[in-house]
Image (tube, rainbow, N blue to C red; front, side, top):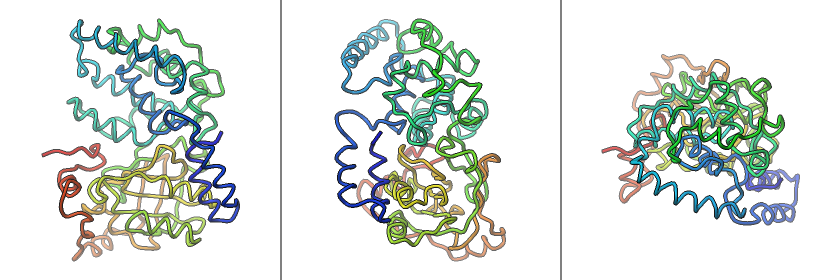
Length: 402
């Protein structure tokens, strides 16, 4: 059960003195034994599942391990599917409709997938000319519960999902409950409902995939939070939380960038009950919105994973789990409220009410804005400087637009 997230957690455990450097080395050597993507429902496997849910990849192709012989057959079938679509005149935009994106959001909520799916789906929809917003994610998460017990928050890997029938198990279960659009066209030239009828996947096994009547969380795996700290939205992975972790309040520990926060964790300066605030890591402020896994892994390894919250205008690795809220918008460099949070400010997170607030009155926040200037840009020339000038906010998928 060792995977890449185990390594990052072991770094924190080593710093805390609970494992030796030799044990850390052994974990590092065992974490990635062969080819393929990270084994859990991290970003790669989330996006392969989404491709299947969108109808852009072949039914049943998302979950097979990279080294499995069936991958050769998948490649051959994919080539045949492309030729067939050319003959039928089916284009990517014919497949990626609003209904298809709603299917993808439903599946990622049921799977408890990566929060990066929100960014990617918003960006893909933008390129496809489909109107998609954070409101769509909450609307669907309210109806589709989290039912797949997959890592990083759960027990199982993608290979276990494959063993019990793959992503079609989840999709057929959602379709039968009226939670998927079965009439959308797919890359096979057939509808989603026709594809699933041909595969005829088994029912959920009750362990890797729970039935809808017995979900892991009654809401979807990804929720959007809005409030005085995130007027334009933020994203939390509910799939990584226990049922008693859905609300949190604590003092802010503020860092302008990930590195300072990482140093504070490694040197024991973060306490139980703190809310770590990492800013200037957004699409523009980063620039590039680099993902965070080392810091969340270090928190877990240091024994702080269930008692410390982390909030950022940046984003997280798909291997992240726990009380981690990302994509806070507007970001700090654009003068979002996160730029004006001070050390010790109380922050309240309430997942059931989908709210994220800094408990400072509006008049005080306005005072803090007087004379404010964002931190100097990290790049003043070259491609990253150009990117920072063109990129839109995380709530719009961090797309670039001239």
